[in-house]
Image 1 (cartoon, rainbow, N blue to C red):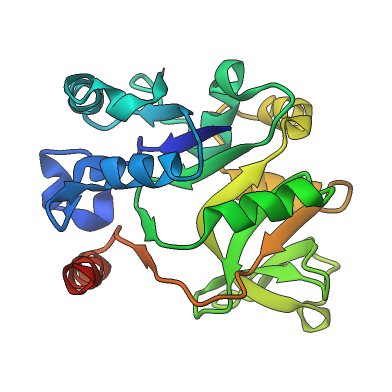
Image 2 (spheres, one colour):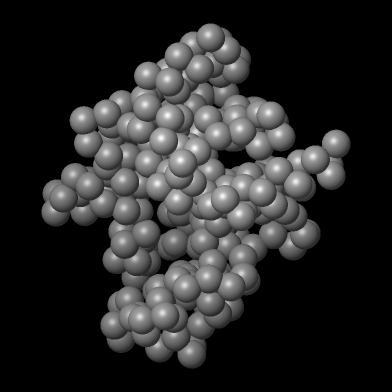
Length: 247
């Protein structure tokens, strides 16, 4: 199976740490997040990975090279000239991700011990075009799912904005997105059409627009797991404490 790791972000919330290094090379328990994500993906027999780069791209390229790409077939999707956001990033990497099999997408700033094998199996057994890791946790922006975990929209509870506008948030359950998703290549043509509006675009507005015609599903693990977005100093600290306690 193939995967893509988003490692191109600016890491603005982690400054000054990211003033001289990319967020993907920020360490948790003495190990970079990029290495942690790659090593975790390898546990699930993912042996071909695309890593996109933008912020300090040469640092990431060198890091991967001196570590022999951690034993996986690896491709660099270079966004040095323009940061393409998540949707544009996936589209740029199409040449490596397209095919007959779904691929997994993982943010480099997400540290989790969720059973990705179970998530992959759930996606394969379903007819979903994309399966998103979700949780019932507090956030400002939510994915709206029905009782069989099919996405019908999105809501920002701070601003009151709901998309599509005709969706009634009260009809659905609200979930936070966990930064991990599995995508079927069947979505690439739709992504191409969406990308004609602008080459820089987030994947979430695409999912919101596509969820009426395509099956965008949520995956909520039945077993408790740990999850950290290390993109902020306080959550980075929590992740470091969890890793230390796990040793």
